[in-house]
Image (cartoon, rainbow, N blue to C red; front, side):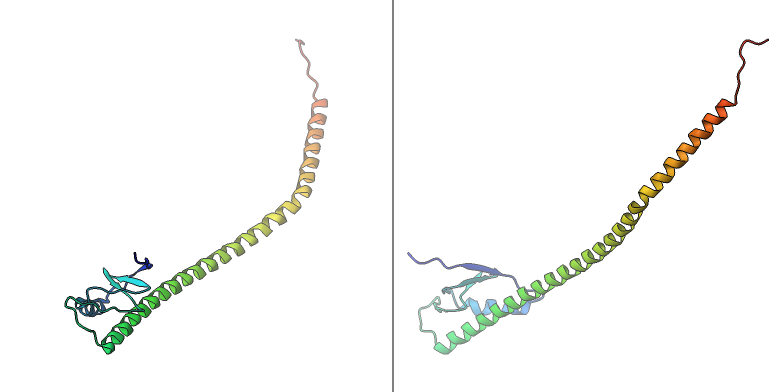
Length: 155
């Protein structure tokens, strides 16, 4: 029983057809690739740490070819990491934009809250003025009714 190795799926940027063609041509001669960290790119399993180099016909793989293959795979992994970094950079830019928008909204809400607090501070004075006006209206109505004399049943 072998030890299971973690798998990672990398996606290449659109328009990278030339890289994919080169990658596929490189992997057509290699049927089995194994390693401690296995990476899957477009259906091919690649090890950036160790290339076994087993091919369809058993033959020794030149050490220089193996090293070149490993360097190529590491380069592809670095390109994939660069793409992930670009994605993270775009996401952080989006987050910064959202934070700036929220700060602007918070400033607007703070101004509106200050206006409401100022209006609330004047409410007791306005309420006292309204009570005074109501009392005056009630007094005037009562005085106007006192002077009205109604006679009923006089012919």
